Image 1 (cartoon, rainbow, N blue to C red):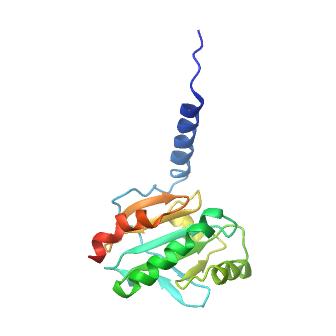
Image 2 (image 1 turned 45 degrees about the horizontal axis):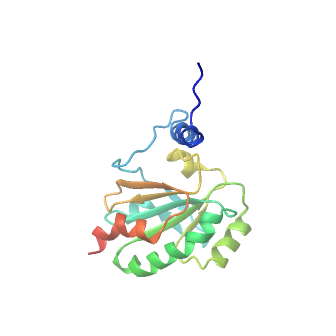
Length: 170
């Protein structure tokens, strides 16, 4: 006798397997909540160097984004607002693009969405590979010690950012 699995269970299992697979490929070890994130550096669209090490002791949001992603366009105003509210208290946000765009398209994306924090164009995907990022958009939220607080796939809400980072801005 063959039993049928309800469709929602099938899709939930398939999604879980996809996420697990995308986080564990190759020789790179998947990062996990609580892990201290290795440092990286890159050149932003303004020609400045962004280094994670330079933000030691400060919370950091790293966003791996796509220029044609509806989530990225929809929630960038939330990141902008959060950055405006907390940058004077140490918050750093960096957007990283490595997925099929050219520098002009990334600059247009940043300009149209009024992004005031660093945006790195990483055409070879070195930074994404360093963190074993396979699926985008992906937001890594780091504590001041640069421990991974959360890896958020897809869109990100103000409530999520507040929940994760408000303890550092009391």
